[in-house]
Length: 273
Image (tube, rainbow, N blue to C red; front, side, top):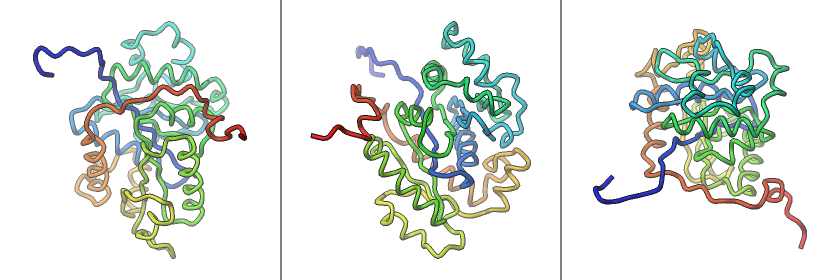
């Protein structure tokens, strides 16, 4: 900051919501490796497992958390921003992880309002908060999309994934989230009747980030719990994630969030005139 210039703006961490219209297309793997890739750029990074029933972030990073988001929910009203970090699990890479509840029935305890409070407190401690959201658009995922500075929408070349992704993007448009959304085609080199170069036109997206298909390495990374940007940093997969990371951090400044008085439901279902 230049000398003599005063500002009331406090630079808080950016929230990146990693989403998909359906499960099983690599969302968690991308979230984990993106978080570690950001760490490699000397940034402070928190990764939140946003699938509160069946989250796999801990497995993908070979972690055994002492605390989960369920523990933080119970005490969030009494916690300061600097004490929220006590509930995080530190990965050897330096990424701080907020794990999903240990059992699916505990997901009902994780209410949207308190999750947003947690994220806002974490903004004071980290440069980036990556949220590996649950598949689809509902409940807490929708709330996290609203407060996110960036929304990464993951898809692949399967027809069902593309059909549902198109619907998701259209919904994001109605919610006025489209401008902060980025489409990512995972496994774009996989065998498919649909060509990767045809996807942008199909989905109405001009700028697309592509991640190559390396099923063997991706599967090995998940099964061993070692992010491939660590174990295979020179692989095609890792290079694609590093490039995506560079694109993410190269955007200047903080995304300015407008105050919205209109509810999300009203945006989706406007009153007839």
